[in-house]
Length: 255
Image (cartoon, rainbow, N blue to C red; front, top):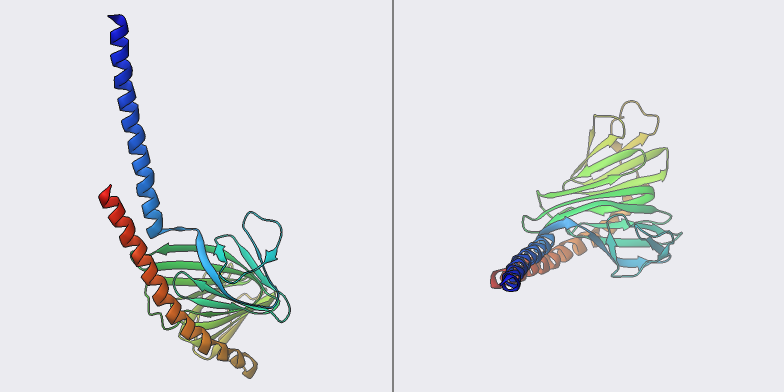
């Protein structure tokens, strides 16, 4: 009789444990579905490599040759050698072109595909980066570029950040407007179309923006190509993400 009772108790405990295990697995599957909608991780894709370009992963110490189509994750760094450039496509559809002798890291990237909201922050250690988030017309898009000296915050424009020197930063705006502030200061300056601002490390107060010089304007030609690529890439990317979300929802409904 005692053996039978112990056997029954064993069966009950097993069923309860199994039910708990099933619930835990289901919760994990639901969490995985949520990651498709919002999360950090894959931040961008390398779309074009010209010359010597290298990538270093967040958990790596060595630099390796960058490849076209390679995914960049949060925490990864990328650098260009002399006479080299690399174009990067972001989840939001924004594009950037990292110029020669530059190094940049992906500080953060959060994507909410369901609500079409994106936040990206790049860390430009040295060099120049051209950024195109113009023509996207997305109120849920936040794109920032930080340098050792300044922060440039954008919501739809074409601009250049130049941190060739660790002691100062230039921000030139070709379309739209950019909010620029010096690290350590609370105030910011709005830089509008065809204007440029210089922020020095020892600056106490921000100087007013001035007219873009001819040398900087020559770089604007690159945005004609970047603009077309940004629009095409964004349409394709959003289409794929929406298909993934719909597919995942169908799978969860079947379960």
